[in-house]
Image (tube, rainbow, N blue to C red; front, side):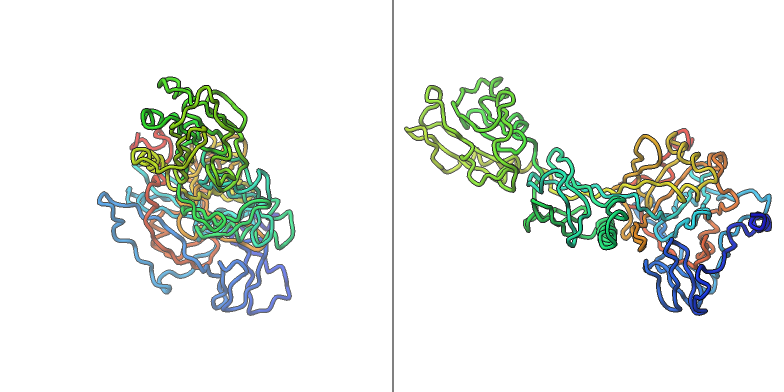
Length: 540
């Protein structure tokens, strides 16, 4: 312990590395300590994660550090800085702190606020005693800011997948499989969507090696906006890709329903008035019957005498008219008349006009009652077809949404401050903006730092894996310099953005690292401007 403290006092701090764990390691190999695997990498080869390589005896990053360049008023990103040549960049010592007693430097103007260093390609804080790879100072609207940048190694993480469809994917809690391995389960259905919960620590580390390996590979691919095939026990086969229509049993989904059957009846009741005598909107949730519905009652529609199967909820609203499925309105219906039990002869009449339609308008049929009060198929009038088309017009495109959920703890927080609970409290107090690759995140209430982010708002190829197994994902913490100092941040390792840009390869773990500039994802707030207004007076 005394030797470690002496090294820190000498200005080396965490720059000191012990020898390799395996003293028998061949001389031409180097040990990578960016994760617990501790790969021994031969010259010219890469580690198990494909993220680090041995280049002439130096540990180098394969992927560049990604930096965001803010758009100008005309929508352009301006001239992006060029990377210095390898000879100019050189190798900066591992985590070399500032000279003792030297105040942390910050940008001298707001120019630095136009570039944001993301954690994509930044490396990690493992083996836990290290400060974050990048601790960057800049100025935003006259306020001195710090952004702490690191890639997290997450085993406590999952994906919440929202699939816009009325199709039945499988029973709630059913296993979801990828390459034959259980990687998640069917969660609760939401309005017009089915939900899957994928990944999680029990699948990543609590099962077999193959289960963990398949789970993290699946999560990496979905997080990187690639397509993945799933099978659901007792249910459907589903192809999921963020931002794309889901494919259920080989059929691409087109529309997300405008509403449940009852809502659809209410929305279009007035438009149907005078053109039809009865409308049934078939839905796995609530099937609506126009003349019984409160909307029909308010419009003074004549009761049709229709008798419908299912459990009546309130007037004109029926539950459980059929089983869930991939047919009409998310039911197993192929023939909509299968849910009709008949008509009350005291109320029904020959020539009565009946429309049966699904909640998306994809299924629709027109019937006219004959003299025996039996429904006969007939040609749908143009005026009715126009309303059916309008139901479809009001349906949003069916898409799959993928949200990454992770708990940020352990070495992540230690990479920010020597007293990790202070970071948690600062986030809970709204004094820290958390981003993933510059994308805004939602931090769940309660203890810890549990975050959720839409992968479509993150840069491409933001996610990686390590064979422990675990997911590697970017995370950044932005806050005022004064707040960073107050929560016990690693002030000796703060570097001005100008220095980071000038050196080209400046990196905390000593690995020479290229950089790449991209424009922020459209619609994302600039990460340094996501703090409360009182944190940045110029934006109040």
